[in-house]
Length: 170
Image 1: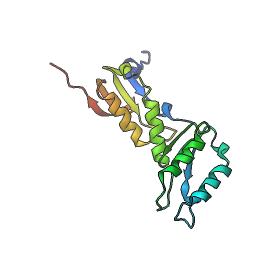
Image 2 (image 1 turned 90 degrees about the vertical axis):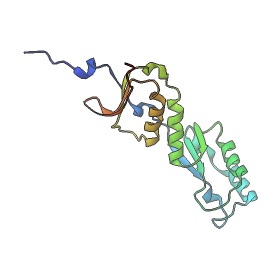
Image 3 (image 1 turned 135 degrees about the vertical axis):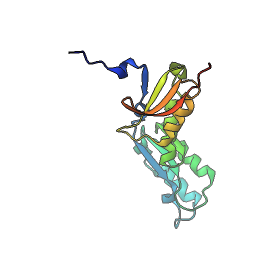
């Protein structure tokens, strides 16, 4: 009887799992619509009172998206006041929605990768995950790896979809 050989392990393929770059911190959306008078107007005096009395500790260590989902004109300083209260409390915050927040978190995480580790390698971007991985992350890792890898695939080592293969210089 012949021994079982793991051909995937011998193939030199590197599996890149975007799930490993998922930020596990809780997220929150701070929506200024709740601070609007009649759902339309931000009144400075009322807003400043809200800013003073709001329990900012609830955002401790969280990733926060600051937005206004109402169709209202919000002065830039209002967003800046919220940011000033989140500084030193929230783990990370930005202007935008939940999707923008996830994109920024992946952007930050993927920017730490040493791309040279993948030079001339065959890389598989793992397709299945148990954590939410936005399409943005797949595009971003492709953008980062395409200039250096010899091939890029999507899926699982046993079943991949070819995405890119470097042309040989013969």
